[in-house]
Image (cartoon, rainbow, N blue to C red; front, side, top):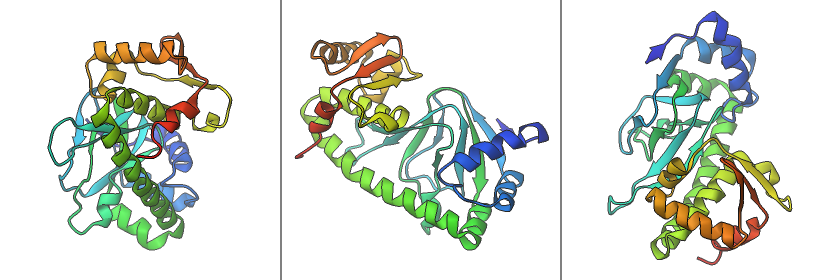
Length: 245
């Protein structure tokens, strides 16, 4: 579903853009130009927004909801969910730097998601006129390059033991929803996902995910206070699993 952004929602969209990483420190004129020349698109739950290796001429900024980022490796089997993105996050922008504009990842909505669809012409204007935008883009690209090394570790570990996929899911959730607590003695993690959704993040059956999560609880790695609410007193133990691979 594609909508034009009406006057009533412009202030709300502007506020989200100003807080997003891709639009950090952009001036008012650039923000207004993005909104004026972009469309609001809405995808229902479990809809593929674009596929890996497809070509695209636009990028997206999330206004509400969540998407999962999926990478398919050479064997074409067992696609891996490597990240979760939410409000203010962007995706598809790095492909616009490539001549063929080929997507390197697949993006799928988790729940209904509202996105700002930004055309390549707007991207080019920002790239050529805003040093702040170029800086933001570079920082995002460097972070994703660093994250690709972590993905390699994840692949090696998950091939050895399915429990590493569950550990990786919690590591991913902490990074998304509790990154400001990483140095705390106990991390308080509240997430908007149920066990079925968490199982899909780990690319396994719900029954297998629940069994492995229960083992983490028995080992004291995590505590489940209520649905969607966890406390994690041993984050360092989760991190150690990803070292030395």
